[in-house]
Amino acid sequence: MIRLSAAAPASIAAQPPYSNILYTLLNKKRIPIFCVRVHTTSLRFSYSPIRAMAHSHTVSVPTNQPQSSSSSQANKQALISLSDKKDLASLGIGLQELGYTIVSTGGTATSLENAGVSVTKVEQLTCFPEMLDGRVKTLHPNIHGGILARRDQKHHMDALSEHGIGTFDLVVVNLYPFYDKVTSAGGIDFEDGIENIDIGGPAMIRAAAKNHKDVLVVVGSEDYPALLEFLKGNQDDQQFRRKLAWKAFQHVASYDSAVSEWLWKQIAEEDKFPPSFTVPLELKSSLRYGENPHQKAAFYVDKSLAEVNAGGIATAIQHHGKEMSYNNYLDADAAWNCVSEFKNPTCVIVKHTNPCGVASRDDILEAYKLAVKADPVSAFGGIVAFNVEVDEALAKELREYRSPTDGETRMFYEIVVAPSYTEEGLEILRGKSKNLRILETKKNKKGKLSLRQVGGGWLAQDSDDLTPEDIQFKVVSEKKPQESELHDAEFAWLCVKHVKSNAIVIAKNNCMLGMGSGQPNRRESLRIAMKKAGDEVKGAALASDAFFPFAWKDAVEEACENGIGVIAEPGGSIRDGDAIDCCNKYGVALLLTSVRHFKH
Image (cartoon, rainbow, N blue to C red):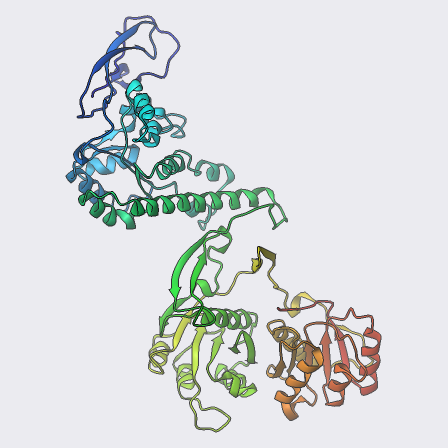
């Protein structure tokens, strides 16, 4: 079937333009462009009045109408419109070899032609020029009718026949790079952001995905090989079609979530919590199992705009070792979040998301040994993290260091995490164990939104980014802490925010001596921490993640009796006066921070 639309002679008087005909300018003259659609199915010609764009007369030209919804593969049509043209040439050539007629737009058509692929341009089907700076190009019944028509519905096919519209059997579309544009290093102004929102692309993708029973839809170049194999087999696999349709809808949903997130930031000012929002997640890996072997699991990367270049364990590079497990990710995240809080060279060792050893020193080798010493039993099989580069000397220490418990057993770790490694350091660590996971990652950006799932919903909150520099340690006791004691209290306070509640940390000289975590009452956490600290508790600093509900014959007095030199806690209890009196009785400095650090 051939549809031809021609302009009336130039001598005819001009009238207001209509949308039935396409013109181009050539040597400053109006030259008509013929709008052609070719189908090799049985044809019948009829004559339709076509009003010229710029002329008052009408002309009658033949229009072709399809008589049948069935056609061989050699007569099928593919619509291709791509922003990302990766592997476009191989796709176009493959489709052409299969006998497909290819319809395309703008730059995509040019790229295909340059690759030697014959192309019918969209305007030849729509008989309408691209307009509004490209905003209107494919939004036309001749395009969407050909995509959305159901082949098993006679009245759909009759409508196509009546209007001379042919069908599309394949739609290959990806979208304007909105995500890349709005997250580019130089940023983008509001108007440019708006112009990078794709309209026609999502419309075609959604239309094809809805009608996937008859129209294949592809949104990613990674699916081109499977598509061509499918077409070569002349199969009718509905599961394959449904999978591509799902991927198409997911692709558009993720795209729309990026647009929505970006627009919310333009209007929200300080409000981080929109009435509704979508978190786009992308599968990074399937995991062997979840927290326990009977639980299936997978790991997803957050593709929200806020997470671009924001660091964190999800973006870590794994240089060596076994694949990460569900628990590995949780523990590595806890270790990295903790060690990243410290400004001086620091080592953090984590077991079951709790830091069991933390130490800061100018000499990172010494910091590592002190972190192990805090709790060598718990450190064994844990995750060790550094906030400085791992070089050859540190790597050797990690490989050879013996447990302080017996002086013989080499320390074993599941994971090492650091911001960078020297080549020599990496080579040595690779030799420690074939299973040792070596991760390199960037510090988490502050100000992130923290999400946590509960049954049937999600909790959202600001991340807990406060550091000692952000708060005031108010002295409320008669004893004023010495500078070293205040520093110890700040160190302990920074550690305790990463320990599960109820949490107590005892520290001295930039080193965690003991911690108690996860106990239903604060007194038990205190006793665990003191037991681990041993004799070193004398004169040390104690930090509590929350206030002490009781003081006399309870945690505060027990800490004082055991020689604690300074206590840092949020305050806010109705019995804060008892805590002050107790500390005054034993000559202990008490600091109130007015900041709680619950961690559940």
